Image (cartoon, rainbow, N blue to C red; front, side, top):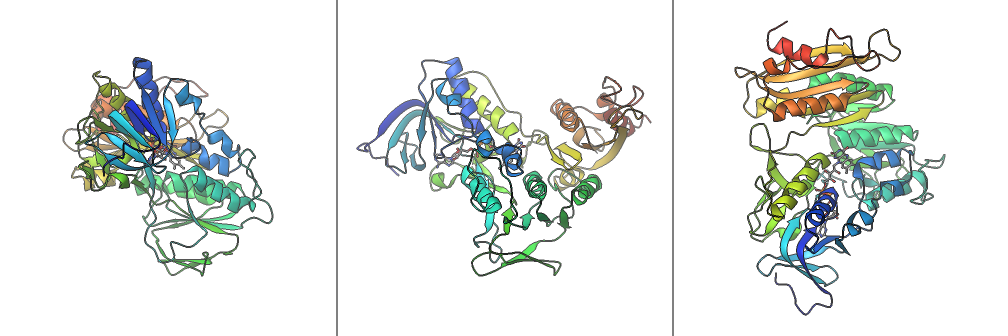
Length: 469
Ligand SMILES: Cc1cc2nc3c(=O)[nH]c(=O)nc-3n(C[C@H](O)[C@H](O)[C@H](O)COP(=O)(O)OP(=O)(O)OC[C@H]3O[C@@H](n4cnc5c(N)ncnc54)[C@H](O)[C@@H]3O)c2cc1C
């Protein structure tokens, strides 16, 4: 679609960044830091950019929603221009974008960082009023309004009162769904978490690592329904019952209770449909420099389809920890500097009650689905010297390729230092390490922070995988 050069509002810029999430903000800062002459304009529709990862903790009442708002100064201080608006048409030939307001922005180079939005599956009743998703400021405000009967302003801490909802059903037990379930439980509600796979965190964990997470959820008082899918949301205007595939029904008070859908994300690329921009199932197709199929156009973050750093084949990776480095690579390439993104490793972690849990690379199940012949080993220690107060169990699982003995993935649970162990295993994946090399990993030991010097859970699992113990 052609842009109208007669539009009321007409802006021109060297680099146009379309989207105001972490990818957009980081790219704007990097571009301006390296070249103060460059005019950089960022367009985003929402009032505030947000720290999405912190939304569950605002919902559980740790701090007000406003704490999750990023300051616009993160952009304007570096000299980037911020336009509030939504792109409704893109003309890659004339290099311009039309906004919903009718305004037009022409650019020399374009960085697409339009992110992803929650998927709503086509289950009967999925359009009913009290079904929410979690991503935007409006999503969070809708949930807070339901929790507090509309009696909580953004700068106030969320507290679910006696007149508030009593029950919530969270559909999807990925990290977002589990953090949502925890938040509502902390608010004192009866929480049902429904997951169609046989274990929680199905993208991250194998079943043999998921069991302690199930236990932690149940200990926290969350009703867990695994291996079960939603067949129907029953109700006239709002959900009055959720019917599950095992024949059970969860009854809700349609006037107060609610459902949260956390079943996945889809890339926000509708505005590019029908253009020459190459799109894959998971978003804009990019190369290692984040260049798209159109010269002068880059894309980064959740709106992109990219490949695994382990086997070079497409894989999902909608994480801020992928979006930010991708955006930095795109910005460096726009500046003419050498940079490349090696692919997704998808190191991630979450917290469930007393337990921290995380994973990186391929689980055993995913590795097999992708054609690898694999075996697994475990390492078990405690988080501190066993005689120290607060020492608890730590378990590491390694997924290893038969023959090459290359590490393909790792999973960790424990009460401390889980994300740090996951990051270390990601580094090993990035370095394409074999378990023989990982078995030589030199570690530290201290009574409050680790197990005895004699053993380390990662090294133990690697030694077993290398046949050394
Ligand atoms: C509840 C929750 C918790 C999370 N927790 C974690 C976590 O703990 N760790 C982690 O690594 N990741 C986490 N994530 C994922 C992380 O937030 C995303 O991976 C990250 O935000 C992606 O950044 P992005 O900049 O690519 O896209 P987004 O943050 O989605 O930003 C996209 C931007 O583009 C704008 N946009 C879209 N379409 C248009 C258009 N047509 N015109 C103009 N602007 C447009 C959007 O409005 C938005 O400003 C979480 C996500 C959620 C929802």
